[in-house]
Image 1 (cartoon, rainbow, N blue to C red):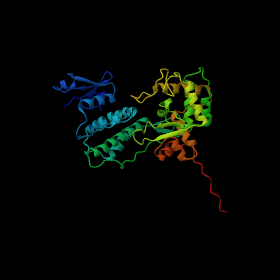
Image 2: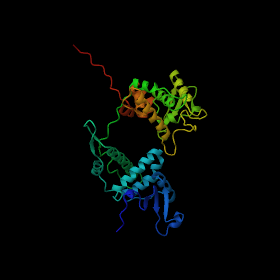
Image 3: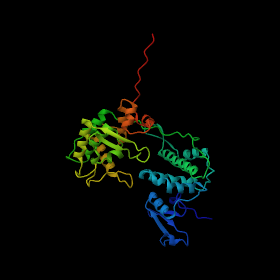
Image 4: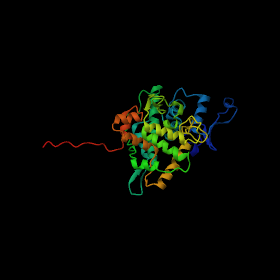
Length: 367
């Protein structure tokens, strides 16, 4: 009878285990020569790195008979093509899915199993006002089912199955979109903070807000703005998020306000020689392209908002994404809002980013 796996190793591929913060592969006896002569081969410090090294050594499986093997191939072939942050989230989702479904035959899963999986992760709690809400565990379960569904889509593509077992047959209630609308006076409050220095974080955050209010650019695009790319017509970007899909490009034409916002951003930089409009003291871009994270900028923004909350009348903090939603909400038409946000699908703009009440004129009475 096989030995039961430790809790920290459940959800990992066969012969993998977590040890002292790193992932290792227990090499089958006699195959040590294929793994640098080691009995325990270190795959990596995190799941994305471990799967990359695993793929380099053995490649993806040619066939799969159970969901665990399908998820292994999905992790090796599909996830590495995604953005770094998405890779990390997907690898965690795969590990969680394996805990439940790894040994299941591909043909065993049915729609009711999906409902059971999500319901098993759902808990209802009451907030300070007595209102009931679902915990984040349900949201995580929904994201995991998205990964599982896509894996089965690939299973059909790879010839493992003739049809997807639960696509378009499961209707799960998803959390409502965030509806925080940032008022004009709240933006003014952020811009009213007095910087203690001639350069630095406060001025950078304020310049960032001015640019975001004018353009609606996503954080990843704003923080990746290289100064040399500005041209005589305006600021042209290719959305980083969709560069490998729609490839959509947007040109924000110059206005006096846009030029002034760029000048403010340039003046606030702690390193004037940097090629980036927003940079740290070393002149580097805030975004780490290996991980997709912007830890330095997140700290800057958090500290800035702490000052805003302490020194102004603002009581309900907002995030950067809420500013992007404000731009979409304040645009006169949905078409203009979608163009500002560089959305390929106008429905995304309408469903998530238009947060103001729709203005409707009453009908004129007939009599």
